[in-house]
Image 1 (cartoon, one colour):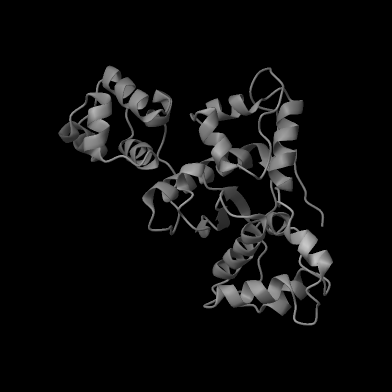
Image 2 (cartoon, helix red, strand yellow):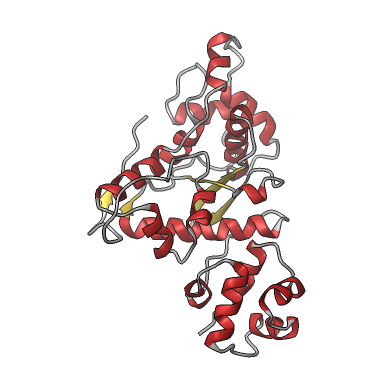
Length: 279
């Protein structure tokens, strides 16, 4: 049976209006609107037609209600991608013990945040991995959302950060820190990020410029895919578990981890593996 909000999510993720989806699927725009409002139930063949036009498996459209973040950007397509990432995170949390959210109190200053996290006076370390170690889930926006700036949101007490795939390594690092400030409720996230990344007492020297040139990757997601691979679960298996195409899954981790990994077997490790991040 079709889940109305799933049809809306898939259509929004593809950046289509009801009229555009109608032209691609052969289903009338009026019927699509009624399906999305739950006023009519489509036949299985119609669900297949809609799924094919949307490039989603039909099972995606009949799965339970998708998660809804507490906030999101104005770009509906990017918000839809965030919903898919939050759903992916929920799947991971059913298999792994991930770091729990551990952020300082709201509006904690950059210096106090560094002190609470026991950072020295040098440049901040890999920001993606630092955030992950404090329970922040970091994902990439798919490349078709490259016009959307990095953003953050909360879902059921878990903070999420979404980075722009087109950003330079320097910009992505700054964006991750700026979104930390947003999660902490700061009114001036740019100033917070600048002070957090490089305290005033530090010299902006060659070593820091070399650091800026690095592409920051995800230690958490790298561990996840490694453990899954060791249990015979490929990224393709993961995508099928989520009722997504592999390209959609790759878009959520683009630049953060290599997912084109070898390995076959039955999907899903047995039991729960404990993942810990050490800095």
